[in-house]
Length: 388
Image (cartoon, rainbow, N blue to C red; front, side, top):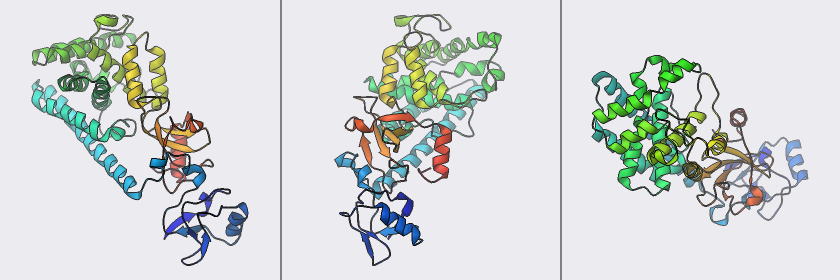
């Protein structure tokens, strides 16, 4: 039998299965509500748990879920866990590949194009298969790799994801992914200070840093990379209002691929921890991009990123209007303000035995109230209220 912690029993709710006090004594049937008197009595008798042949959940929460997804099975949970593990393995492999790519460049001044091409094809395949997990960039383990390596990988993933929503053909997606992985190549032509700085750069250092897109462009052109790749690398720091570098281009004069890299790069830079500042959560980062989009970034590309991740990015922990804690499970391309979420607790923050999926676009009375910060998430995990 499965154990049901007494603390998860909520008065005035119904359970979805029969509950037992021991192996034979039936305590509650699905038609019988949990009462405050019963909970107090069980506490007085010293019981800390009851039992069921199946996992049970309070109907007051489950009924908020869409009928077709109201009760994910154990198999669903195991498949999610397996997909998450496989995605992390691929992400770690991609980090290692990129590290070796740059190491080869530093030692031999070469970048083999065909292996890079094949790697981007894998990114595209993983996005199609495990989109919900590969886009949880803030949750993926990048320990052991420098910021420039993980940033290059993340920009490649995000750029391809944005390009996919734009229905770009396969060869354009591959070029976009290659440009994402290589967009910081020019940094390796600068002193190590720029890569490993644990502080904000001085004005003089910023001026020197502004040469890295041009250095990367020249290097890739000499190595025979396609013009679409080299141009994206050259222009990825240009801005819509002409305040970018190295050429001060404006609006339509900037290549579309470079605009995509710019948005992906800006988003990833904000969600990453740096020695001189704490990472923002995905929601705050998107709001910042939306605020800046008309001045710095192409509005349509920013919108594509929002539609790709939802306004509350996949993997975010949120509190709903009824008090429940949920995990953003998937974006809703038709309405980025109302993603699909996986319920983790009931209204009183009691952990659920199952994690029903709620399509918020259909249940806007359970709209998202706020995004939890990292300290709140850490405490909830430590208290075993939400899964790690």
